[in-house]
Image 1 (tube, helix red, strand yellow):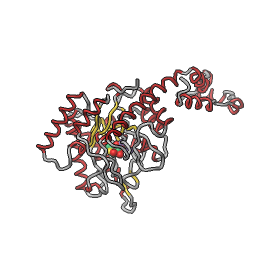
Image 2 (tube, protein in one colour):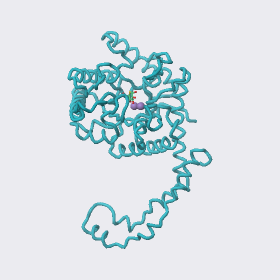
Image 3 (cartoon, protein in one colour):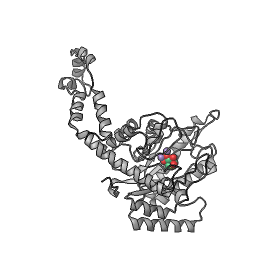
Image 4 (tube, helix red, strand yellow):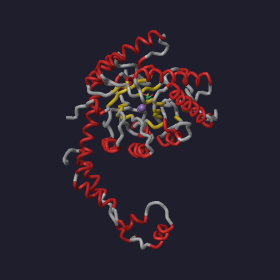
Length: 387
Ligand code: GLT
Ligand code: MN
Ligand code: MN
């Protein structure tokens, strides 16, 4: 039970299980793991795929012959294990050249470097069979407002994304681009702070159909926003191209905690939403083991993310099938056909009927919605005393 299998589509980033535990105050606490070793370990755990930044696999400045050797060796590990690389992304944040932005650097040479690095990462991803390309604008932000840059950045990012989509088309790459918002860190404020911000931006691009979202649990939660609502809106727009699962306490630095380790209810409703939505994409854990852990702790962390997801999946099903939950929900939506007939697309007749009908307002003012009972049932399902 709760054994992860490739069909569950669980993925990890090379940078997640490979995280060496460095933080702004402390040095690395774990050895860097060989990517080929990570592929074998993840395959043993029942993982579907491994995602990467260009630099996670190929250190910056690697000469071309050495690059090709690294790629060949990595591909061999993928073939041996059956692990996929569903997603790639360019690291546009580590190089000191990106200190004041990549696509939004005021320096056009830096913007050109960011664009070239993105094209090269698309080439690499194509060699590895990746279909999703994530753009995380970590350095695209500011601490100083006086530059007036916030008036220009939208145009620069739009031009870069249009260029990348056109390059993908020209090369015959089938990429779908998944844009990942975050409110702050490493910049004081990041442009594209929330899901809503990136969602609106997509429709200003040349090929909006190629662009969607990669929402991350921790990022909306840092801003005190409701991640389940954000993902529901993205699903409604048909734009959930990828998802970063982890956990986070509000108003803190980006903790990237083990999935389901902090906000049990939010994680439960997220799994409930994803599993009933028809979303077929990867369930990617963009999280890492605590800095207290050795390598054994890293694999315990990875197993924990997947096991918790599968437990929530089972709990969500039991909750939805609970007869008391069903009857409370039936009551909740109060589907009176007379009222429903008043709603829907505009017509002159409907507008007239709406103005003439006697609304049962006194009863509606007194109505209770039984949400205390419904929410108690959630708690009891989660605590394992029901279902
Ligand atoms: C970085 C960041 C993540 C992004 C990754 C993609 S890198 O670890 O914290 O949220 O998803 O570039
Ligand atoms: Mn992420
Ligand atoms: Mn994060």
